[in-house]
Length: 113
Image 1 (cartoon, rainbow, N blue to C red):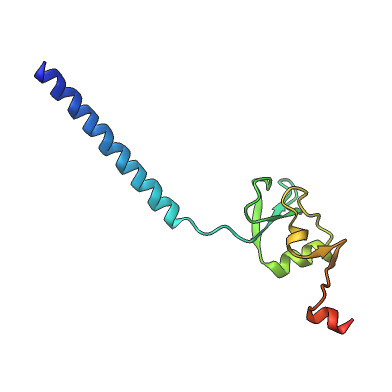
Image 2: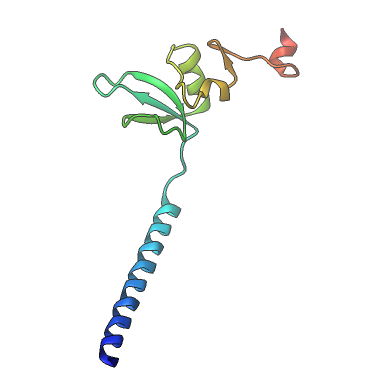
């Protein structure tokens, strides 16, 4: 009985050590992962043309995508006519209303109007 219990304790200890090592590796991987971009441009797989603008954490973006800056996202939505994702609504986050940059009270743009 003692040998049998010792064998099982050794197996359990090995399994615990393996799990701790795996968790440490996953944590190191998470720490090294680059931060998610603020905005994503989804591209057509066949032509490479823009399909939609997404928020950086949107799960609806396809496989072909590239990060874009805030100014580029605004330009794509307003000038270039790229549609906004209907799920994450980057146009709302960027204060764009009907293809125009929104003007709010108290903003420098509102004072010029």
